[in-house]
Amino acid sequence: SWYNSCISGFRNPPSPYVILPPVPVKRPKPAKKAKKAVVFFEVEILDAKTKDKLCFLDKVRPPPRVCVHPQWYPARQSIRLDPKGKSLKDEDVLQQLPVGTTATFYFRDLGAQISWVTVFLTEYTGPLIIYLLFYFRVPFIYAPKYDFTTSKHWVVHLACMCHSFHYVKRLLETLFVHRFSHGTMPLRNIFKNCTYYWGFAAWMAYYINHPLYTPPMYGEQQVTIALMIFLFCQIGNFSIHIALRNLRPPGSKTRKIPYPTKNPFTWVFLLVSCPNYTYELGSWLGFTMMTQCLPVAFFTFVGFVQMTVWAKGKHRSYLKEFRDYPTLRSPILPFIL
Amino acid sequence: MAAHAATGAKTATNDVSHKRRKGPGALATVYLVIYNVVMTAGWLVIAVGLVRSYLAKGSYHGLYYSIEKPLKFFQTGAVLEVGIVPSSVVLTGFQVMSRVFLTWAVTHSVREVQNEDSVLLFVVAWTITEIIRYSFYTFSLLNHLPYLIKWARYTLFIVLYPMGVTGELLTIYSALPYVQKTGLYSITLPNKYNFSFDYHTFLILTMISYIPLFPQLYFHMMRQRKKVLGHLEEHSKNE
Image (cartoon, rainbow over all chains, first blue to last red):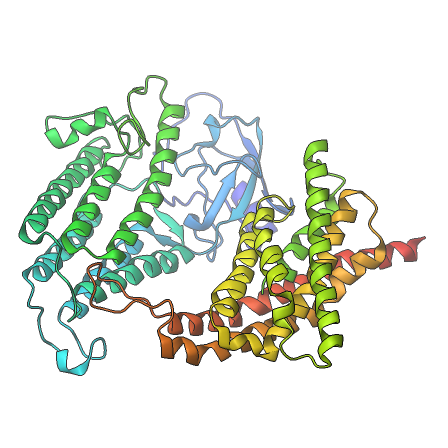
């Protein structure tokens, strides 16, 4: 059988191979009982860079699933029809791809992968804990006489609550709300992302919780308005996340156009493609106003730039994918950006 | 600091593949030639100024003052080439920024270091490098590049780059006590924006950043050298 010829032919592979025994990996398609004559496929896998033939199989019985030589786990493999093209998805079935009966695939190693959930949990837990270290003024941050003291300004306590609430919300959303399109991302991202989140959290927290912190210029008025903005945008952001989740049934990866729902916080979908980013920007503007702290303003600005890049990309892919995409919508800021 | 390495690297790639790349249009070429000629001339003025001053004074101390103005003018003028020369915007931008930083934020701002010999060290390194680099660009644009210039560009950096880096680091180091004493460019707490900046610490961090950056750029230039000059050795063997 083809399985035996594959294994015996490549019993001692000098380099990692993609082997196609019928071992389901991600989402196995239910085996269909063929009633008519079965068409056999020939499959060859080439390395995307060197074009070396990695594996050749004749008499591949559809539907095949891609499995691997142990060290090259599936999330790390990119199989594509064109060396420079996009990766095929786990759900793609050989019969439905635009290949003849001899299919040529190109293999690329994506490098070590890590799951999105792991990355999110790590990058969000950091700021939560780090901010609290500064809030409680643990030793070696400020002068020793301030160790374990608390700030005399009530806005500092409020800021700690808001900051902590924000990251707890993010953690809970990661665990219970979000539905991810991709399971994994490259491993190096976790170092990059954690440096960003943890670094900025420490920088902001240092000043807000500093013994020489100066409360906002316009006092209680300023803080109250800022708090309103912050809470409004937190609820808004959460509403959008729920709305996006409900677009997608559990376990599916379908993409649909998001529309306003009964929840008034989602009505902003009329004007914006990625209102979750809009609300996120609003939250941080509120926090900046609340704390009147320049590092917070920097963090808000950098985050805004990154979210704008993401929003524009998402907006573009919506436009590409859906002919009837609403024309009134802007990527992140109504009518502006 | 990144000066010699960065643009050298990228243009080497262009040398090898210049046949495949489309050159700039006629008007752009004229502009670039003029720019590069002017810059070559400018750095020659600095070189001549240094030599004349040395001969007049009889020593190499305090030569900075004789070329202070053209140095500031032509080094700052290099911001015009970011995004224009055939190197990556990131690399060119970074190197021009670091040069401008040293010229204005260290040497100009901290008067006490202007008499240091370390200043002469990096000024000489920059001057020789830039004269060669801008004439390299000029000749390349006119499709008439003498081998000597190409050789100089990819060989002299071996000495000039470490020389320049040493001069730069010593200059920053000698500026430290004055910056700390005067609190130059620093902001302290408390203030209404709840922000602080310590220029002294910033300078130390800048010095530390040379440790990972310098070897990378240096060995990149080495590899480019093998590619560009090694290629020619092979070519002449085949003839």
